[in-house]
Image 1 (cartoon, helix red, strand yellow):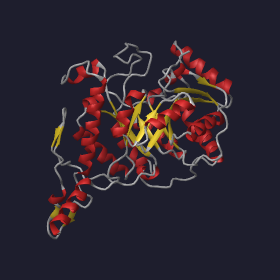
Image 2 (cartoon, one colour; image 1 turned 180 degrees about the vertical axis):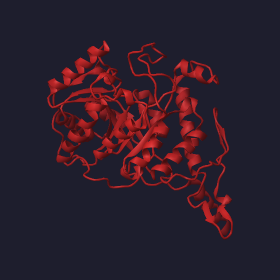
Image 3 (cartoon, helix red, strand yellow; image 1 turned 30 degrees about the horizontal axis):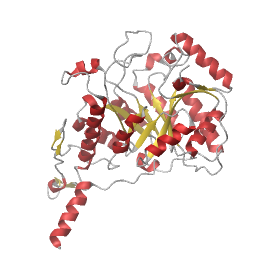
Image 4 (cartoon, one colour; image 1 turned 120 degrees about the horizontal axis):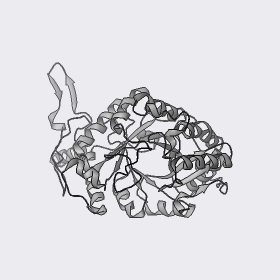
Length: 403
């Protein structure tokens, strides 16, 4: 069995009592769950995957567990077991709703939890992304985040016809880093008080407080300003996944939250050490939770049999009890991971196990919140609201003239 597909069915050593209680949790929502056969499970709701109600119910369940945020997976090609392109299979979930639009739809139905859709930078204009995420932040009153990713798939290249297939991975990540920079500059292109809305004078906006960003790079030439006022959070948190240490420089350059995929405590420690400037480093695990380790393992074996192959993942695969998972999370938290993005193997089963069993277990150990402490995603993550770069520059220029 590959190391990255190890099933954890035994407890880890107890964590140190000095661990801070600031552990954070997120869940990654994808289809019926992360196991390819999840859609076949009782109660999976495969007939509702393309309805707003399905996603609203998942977010409500996550929020009931006081989780920090949910992420919505997305891509620009049909899901596939082959990372290079379509696999032609029709026995697996195929097709998605747009992640940003799903997040916007469920935003008014939730109150506290962060909403983090995935966006493929490779084929998406940063101007479109900036206003979509700013809109989500306004609609959710400050709970939006962005998960940025790249695409190397030739079939997705052919959907757009604007570039050649086979670009180097390093170049795609460099482009994604510029993409994030453009998005953040566009979020800042409206100062916080740019809207006047003064009926008496007939002035709705102060044009002097809208700024050109004048970004020039190998892929993008963007003048700005945005057409959407600055988001309530200023800049919604940006996150990205690095399943390989080669992607760590991209996280270090762009991410407020970096997702990493350790399989041992030493690997978790090394990931944290490699990303000292990233505010939050979250560990990724795919989880199958039951009341006994043997029950979880049998369920996973049944899913594997339905799929016709053993489940493998870029992330650690945990099959066991919530108490044993809590041991593991707290052990990895003790070496510096600030939180975890859990991938429920079967959403209908494992998401409630996270919210109703794992969360209370962590709370009993003093390692998880008992109530939401902030109204914004940045607040939940302990991140300050950033100053607007252009208003700060204007203030400095004014001060220099006055002097």
